Image 1 (cartoon, rainbow, N blue to C red):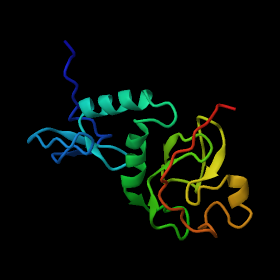
Image 2: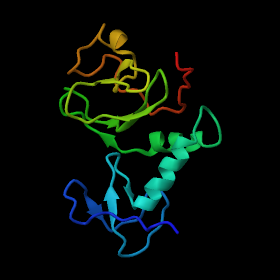
Image 3: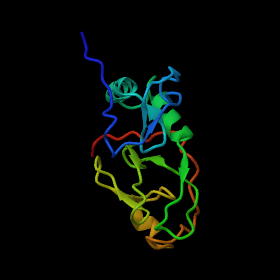
Image 4: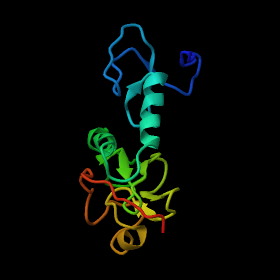
Length: 158
């Protein structure tokens, strides 16, 4: 039998809530849920199920809808270090490989994808080399904030 997972209520690195689970939509009273960095509240069991499903994702397929749902429903955030960026989706798919990434909101608008090792602009979704032709790391993009992604790029690993 699997041990019931739970959060340590004394863990000060987590924010706790007694609101509906945003992954399973369960609304069991008096169940402690932690807020994830992308804004969802969840219990450990929900996260385990989500990550198990994410591991099974390989390119486009029936589970791609879950990743798209995350992209299309994540909250918007301001990037305080980037002048003029006040409403950007908090989660993006890497435009090269499709890995889901979040900005830690502590530095410039460019992210280095740990999967494909390409650097891209989190705001306009162009490769850094292209975005920097008309902008700078701490200023809004000349192209503006890219819309929420409606598809996830697939990557061959090359």
